[in-house]
Length: 104
Image (cartoon, rainbow, N blue to C red; front, side):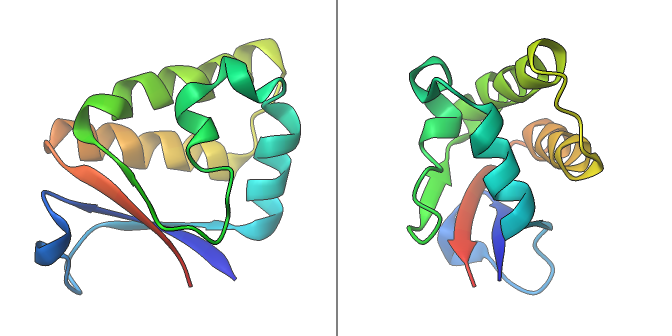
């Protein structure tokens, strides 16, 4: 089961053409094993309940990217899935979109 990140200006406009990124449970678990203490990663912390739907607003995307890049730098954490996720976030930010998160 993957965690889906869907980029859209609002939830009502999500359709089959909306950009999507899927993060596998293994990669999610690895991310949260590295993001400790979690209180240092306030945006990543919003994702701590794998089964809860969440929204990353446009204004939170850049801080999330910085938190992920910090994990790469400080914790030597750089699986390809996280690098791909950062690229997805950057594209979403450049397009002015929010990120809607659903576990499927």
